[in-house]
Length: 376
Image (cartoon, rainbow, N blue to C red; front, side, top):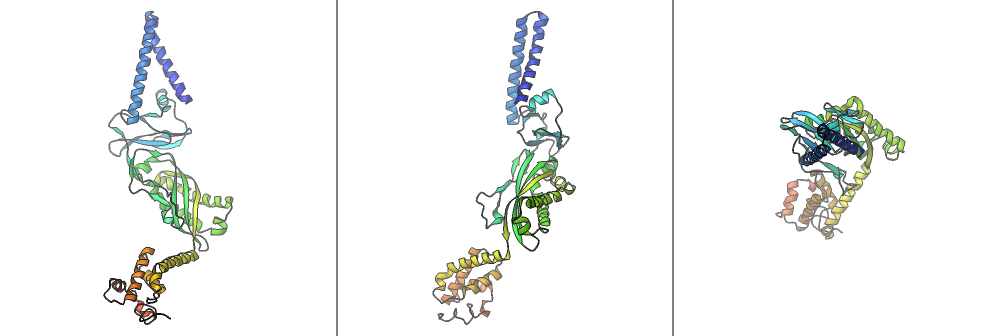
């Protein structure tokens, strides 16, 4: 705010000084005042026109919000300059962002104090690139880590890249020392050090490029740590050592900067959920219990095959089947067993599966209580 006031005062003083020259030269003070008024009015009208044009992308001056970076093309995809509204201590140098202070230029400093930058006249145009947004799922389900991160269906055209940004990454099935596995979500802070790599070389898909790099770093460090003692129940110092090890790995040889144009400044473990064999068994039991409840009304009639055998058979043949699909198939098979109608649709479902249930005494094709009479 102070910079805006000082810049405006300096400009007005210069205008006033220039305007007094005719009055001093002619010896007519009124002419000097009139000249000053005309110059000030012209300046204000010009500034208003430039301001309105910058907000609409018209003319050589553009408006850039704080923390935003834009690139200017001379021809399609041919960057000729980079403009950025950066915090104090950073400056655009060539096509990169480095530490430093901008050189003092009265015209550029005055524009910059209002968030305005000189782009240039056509054919110079601000570059536009596609960007796919991701965010934490607001209806986050602890039992479904694959849904922790919400991703837009399609990228949207954008004309700016954030200088300072945060992003979340979900890393499934990270195995720790000793065999313990966990789903981990991290939140990382990045600075755009080489925007041309992010915008042009990666075409805005730099987060997709860095995902396997970050996943590999987390998985590599986790393999050296014991989950309970050195991660989940670790004190703040030990947890910080884990994240620092990941940062050190990623900063080695500037891997992220060279591949994505982004430098990771910090990261935190925002969420983690253990995945153990015991939990997998519990989850399977929950699914089977749900199936049993759905088939209970048929099973109660005692003219069905053993539901557990059906569940196992369906899961063997359809390993990727969802719980709802398993329920539907088991119910169909149970109905077919009770109906004893070889031509029924449900019986055809069982035949098409080819699950080999007939080898079990409690299966639909066996000689157990599910075939030929009520169980005692």
